[in-house]
Image: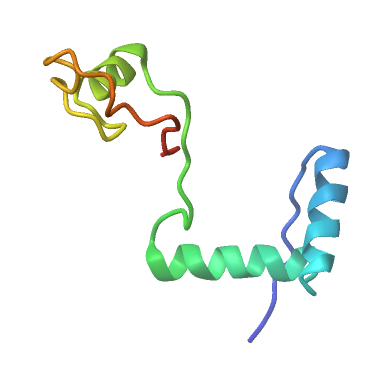
Length: 90
């Protein structure tokens, strides 16, 4: 199998931090990027989720739909003795 050289530009501090993390896992930066490339080829997608902030209207709708484990009518009967003291983090 022949090999090709790939040049990637990134922030110097980011590179140093990533190299340390890779070294802690027993990998070189080259090996880590090769693993990424193989996963990209195999899965035909970026092998991790890329997320950003939810648009305000989406976040509001999620709240209204009770995504935190509480139905919309949770307090409709006025009972507050069932409200948990801590809520699970999604």
